[in-house]
Amino acid sequence: QVQLVESGGGLVQAGGSLRLSCAASGNIFNIYINIMAWYRQAPGKQRELVAQITRDGTTNYADSVQGRFTISVDNAKNTVYLQMSSLKPEDTAVYHCNAVPPHAKYWGQGTQVTVSS
Image 1 (cartoon, helix red, strand yellow):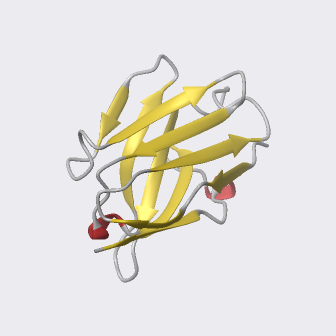
Image 2: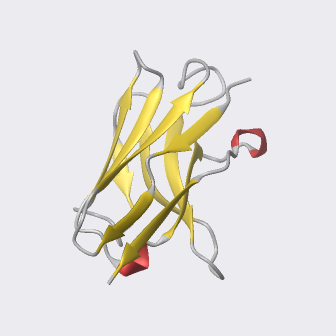
């Protein structure tokens, strides 16, 4: 069973950048996972999928982050990244990585991103 650990969050001013990492304890793409994604949940809001990447590298983004966020995978390091640029206060949330659809057992602690105006 793969375990996912997110890191890289922090406090940043609007317009700044952060890179989030999601380290997997085993192969990210396996018989159970063909798509990986970053999700976020802000206080009082539903969890939303912000970026996803398939086994063959195809990516998709939520409209709210298109052009600002980039998802990537380093299979040698079993790590999924989310490069975030031009950050806005509305990007403030806890960010999690998980499969698509998400597996209940893969939810980790997440990493907090706070963007100040």
